Amino acid sequence: MTDRSAFDTNVITMTRFVMEEGRRAKGTGEFTQLLNSLCTAIKAISTAVRKA
Image 1: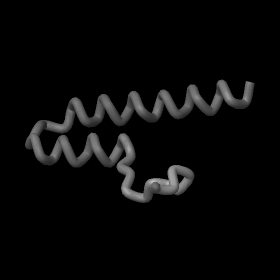
Image 2 (image 1 turned 120 degrees about the vertical axis):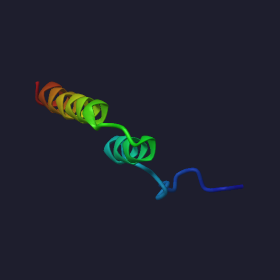
Image 3 (image 1 turned 90 degrees about the horizontal axis):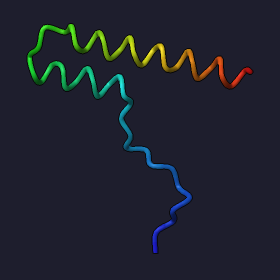
Image 4 (image 1 turned 180 degrees about the vertical axis):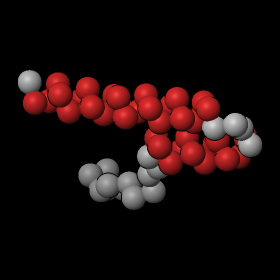
């Protein structure tokens, strides 16, 4: 059996995923910028909710 309590060290962040996929698709970067802005807003909201 495997130890399920161990952390998976092979993870990818949302930001890294969006950047890599944007490069791979050879897009203009507008959608990537939108997704990164959305991620930043979500993180800010999450922080504010945790403090409340």
